[in-house]
Image 1 (cartoon, rainbow, N blue to C red):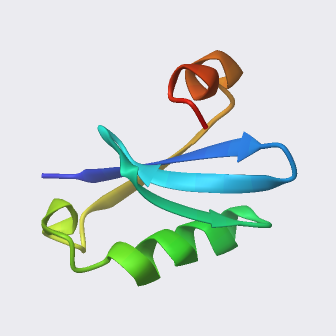
Image 2: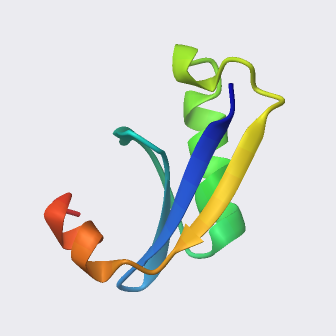
Length: 70
């Protein structure tokens, strides 16, 4: 199983979240900071098992972002 991390721009920063789980979220001034925040704060969540099989996708979907209420 692959855990997919979605990256989105939002205003002046970025957000990184687990696909299908927007509540599992990290934020930062840059892409690396957002991913770091996500992994650091949520790494042991069961959604991250196995942690070694992760896919990261950068997405510029402002309409999708609005639908999720961010």
